Length: 504
Image 1: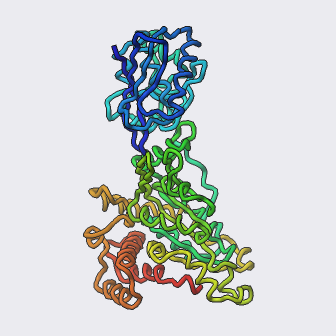
Image 2 (image 1 turned 90 degrees about the horizontal axis):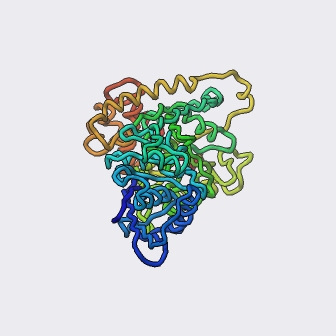
Image 3 (image 1 turned 45 degrees about the horizontal axis):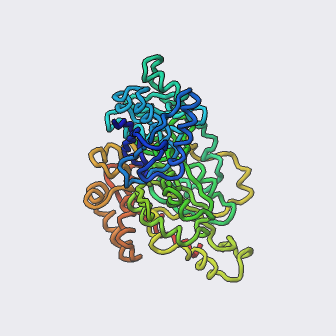
């Protein structure tokens, strides 16, 4: 008779249910695992055999066959150890078969039977809740998985504890959710001297999730400004926190099962590969754009990134998701991020300073920023010049609003957008509005329409650029507390759109 246990196989952030079937039949002693396992899954038989030996359980001198169904789905990872052991114990009548079948299990086993934490406990708990089953996992994964309140999460430290639970000797207590981590914000906007226009652009970008490009000489404060973006963003909503944590769970970035309400801030180096940025590699893992989901992706020295890497950003920016297609994998990851890019105006960095610029002005700047293609540049809602700060200004006292003050205005604008898009699943901020919805919420008054028409005709705005100006104007109106987009809002949005960065 075939005994069954259940686990999951990961396809992106989705966890597909896998049935682990175990049959013990007459024949030459053997222990085989079939169903398209990878090397780590195939090695599970040795870990399971050693763990059972540590519990003084000997395998029978028969043929043991474990099938992972569906057989055409690739099985990767060491988390198949525990479900294979459970199916085998059920086939040996050590644990009740019906109890095992009501559980989704995952976990790696040591040779002494202790359970080792694995990646993906949070999406596995989501899959278990959808299948109306409990989740059994290693103790270290329990606080992470317990955030899914729709299912019971049982966390064990060893295979022996699992056996005692199923046999009623010592039932396991349900796991408790981990802590909500809130790292202290030590970076304040008041630390940045001057750069009031760049600070204003930062506030608009945070309020409406608008992509932003800063161009300025070395040392002008571009990276300093970008590093203060997390301090003015509102905390993650519960749904957003769960989405982001599922991606981080697959990447092993959750700290001791805790879920953070702080929006992620990712800053990859310009030498990062395409697989590191977009996703891919072995198992088609999520890249930096997915790890920045619902947060900020800061790309310093933007033109220094490989051209192929930059061009791959175009589609994810528009769709909010990326599909990593490989010969044996087809993974879909969400990536609704806020892109903040920084660049020098030219290779030497001093294009606007006649005393320090090279002799190739203005060709130097055109060649350098020319690495950013027109279609990609068109996707930046806000383009900001960041001029150098005079050393005499560095001794001035702090001025301007603090991060806390700006964060309050951003939170108020985001609250207006949450109410506005309450009935729209695909839109959470002004940057997501399009089509008829954008016309309904962002059409300016008569003077604003006239100005926008003149600008579009005079400067040849693309259809994408036209709509992005409308979105930014809507966000500026939200920050101003205005229900109607007016001419001043359009004018400010246009001023951030028409900056000729290649001539700074």
